[in-house]
Amino acid sequence: MSKAVRIHGYGGPDVLRWEDVPLPEPGPGEALIEQKAIGLNYIDVYFRTGLYKVSGFPAVIGQEGAGLVVATGQDVHSVAVGDRVAYAGPLGAYAGSRVIQADRLVRLPDAISFETAACIMLKGMTAQYLLHTTYKVRAGQTILVHAAAGGVGLLMCQWARHLGVTVIGVVSTEEKAALARDNGATHVVVGTQSLASDVKRITAGAMVPVVYDSVGRDTFKTSLECLAPLGLMVTYGSASGPVPPVDPSMLSAKGSLFLTRPSLATYTAKRSDLETSAGDLFSVIASGAVQAGLHQSFPLRDAAAAHTALEARQTTGSTVLVP
Image (tube, rainbow, N blue to C red):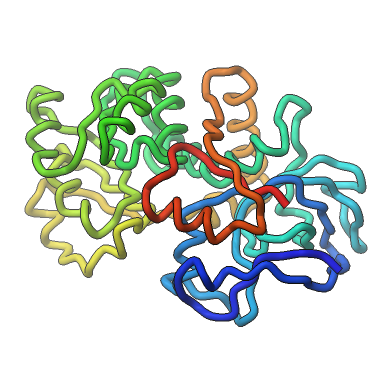
């Protein structure tokens, strides 16, 4: 037997139950990993509440973790027993041990700990594709990053600074403003009441070529006001709720804007893209240019408390759950 946190229905943090589960066995193309650390992400809340659907109940949520390969099924060539590995994407992370498709695992360099890997895989590869592929930022540009003191936000601030990009970070408190500044945000705006005016002042009227918005409903329209003509609106999260339906003519009226809703699954669907993204991330972390930002740790059995803290915006940076 093994231990896992499962949900038997959608709801609040109280639906997360610490339970005994059968120890799974890997099938063809799969690997069994003994998990050492598990990443906590806001997308876990979406699956817990039903905003995103699981395939059936009971379900183990969570999409990020790191550990040791302890067994493999047939036709596995990408990893071997004893390998230190990490992953982001496939549901099932809230468990002491789990089976996963082996081609979704990447080997960890010696310089990257399990805890670091578990808190950077999902957020870090998200930051990688947002800055390098969804919109390829260039030195000298100014960009806008919402939730700049969150897990993805702090990584983006650091990585953008490393690339010579000026970041306008948006946060909810003065405490988070200081954290964003310490992690590379050149300008920080607290709250969104006058965000477009603040961006106009900071950019001397030029506005920004790209907005990265993980907040969703509450900030979507304000974010559009911050874009320069032909700018790109990247909505990649829904912390305040899903964005309501959008009339495409609004994009035209505001300067022929572009809108995208990307996902890590698409950007790393090919094994080669997964390896490139993870490789870029491991390199920038190992160089010291970007810090993982692990600020909180909870025992896996206390996942409900971790979710409560996350939703109350009591966490900063990254959080891991330890089996």
